[in-house]
Length: 299
Image (cartoon, rainbow, N blue to C red; front, side, top):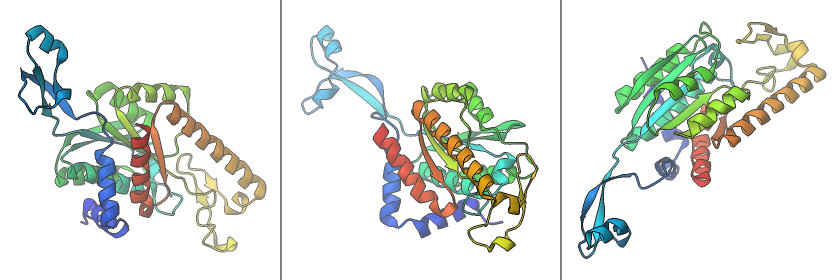
């Protein structure tokens, strides 16, 4: 059985030359704010110590300069949060299944975390339930996470509902972590907006949206008379190609998509969450670099 992580690493090697890979590593490393140090104790000042580390209040009480000592935080925790409902088994804008793109994106982010010595966990599921795997290190663990996503997102899965997975994170995940959310084109709602603001108050959040296929999948690549009928995985109703190509239907669909996109972007922006979009696995590395760069600048 082909390793999903090996596929991710191969794609990174193909589509990101060394300089870009290093930049991607650097952007990931700059996501977390602060010094990444925890206060330990105080000790007497020794010539050559950093003046900024002097605890002036403690020094005044003690009568001589005291230095704050810190211990480094060696690992951060990255939680991969993703939708494995049947919506993710549908076609994306680039023609692949959304699941394949999600696995690639989760794999790249997880591998970056692994290279930095961070631990990675997973929260995934659909409207029927949520699965959580604890954060650990190592490539074997990351491979297990990717396989869980790959095997769960099928046409037989329950409908997608990423809000359930986010609610699980809000209830059970403690401490300050980096949440990397990969989801379908989520529609904005007051309840989801409130949940996102609650999560953002505790965690760093990066959001990657996998774009839907067009109303007529394959239309730009095939002659009109060869475009097959399709169906909606969420409602299991047919999408007849000859009707979908009708100008009035296409215009109404485009208007609805634009309204949903605008609502989602506004909801994430108001919650202080940086969003990126991806249509195919070949675009994942570039999209993640842009996402990390925007998040760093926003921070």
